[in-house]
Image 1 (cartoon, rainbow, N blue to C red):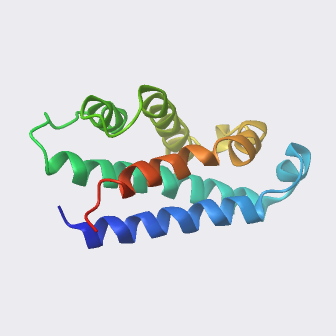
Image 2: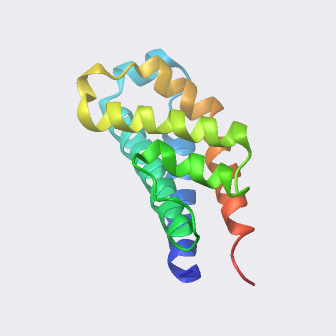
Length: 138
């Protein structure tokens, strides 16, 4: 396992979460009216999900697990390995859905949902980073 690479990705994940937390307006209405905040939040949420998938891929590659066919399956494999709780695995799979929407159908993003994610789901990324950090040597 390339612990240094995973640690770099974890630090990037933490930075994305801080940006989301720092730049999210107080209300969904303010987010709806702020194109810059929309860009910052959608970009950093998308990056955060992608970083989690990348980290999962590295962890899976270092095991005997069957490689996942989808991004969401990456988190299922980590649950199977006991690295994530089933609930956290489910929430991380759900985050992939947002990432796919943001990447492929940006115009269809519901900013009220993004606001909710920014105010109520960032702990999922923190819990993921903590679970992964526990797997790193040292």
